[in-house]
Length: 210
Image 1 (cartoon, rainbow, N blue to C red):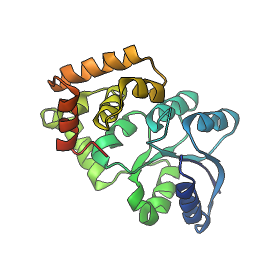
Image 2: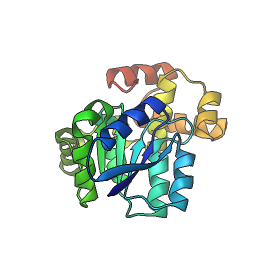
Image 3: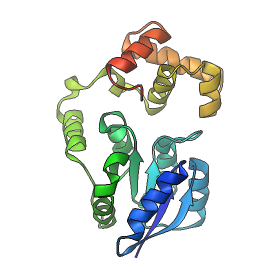
Image 4: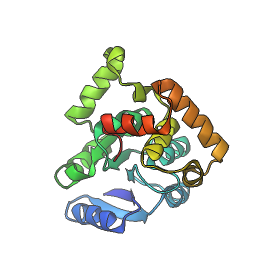
């Protein structure tokens, strides 16, 4: 039996995932968490065969949570679930130790297959992710400017693109406004931009605003 922990801040999503798993033989949802800190508390106290982890959560996001899970137990397989396309977070997730990355819209048809594959010690990689991996390894010059941002810089970029203020970003990420401003300055420099308006237009051009 594959004992699974689901981490997602939306109850309806957790219920949908649980339904898919409950209808499949040999796997069982044994715990749920609605945010990163809840997930970490469960992982510190219990052992799971596999963790399904959402990327976008309030406070500590999925990438941050993934890194802390892996620091605690590098062997536990983690499948990232996201509403974002592979281009935005797949490579960041795989580099942080995820065993796979799946968009939520494909979960109904591919989730069980992905769980079984990852539980067997393999990676679940879609064609889109395979192409991103190839670009990252062999075509460094083909990468977009935002792909050189750190995970935290990328997160701040997306929040600025949504119109969030420095104060709100700091509160959501549990960092000081001064630190947010530092990240903003790095983003502007790395992307060769000058204003928040430029960041918003950049995010729209590269479809990063969702």
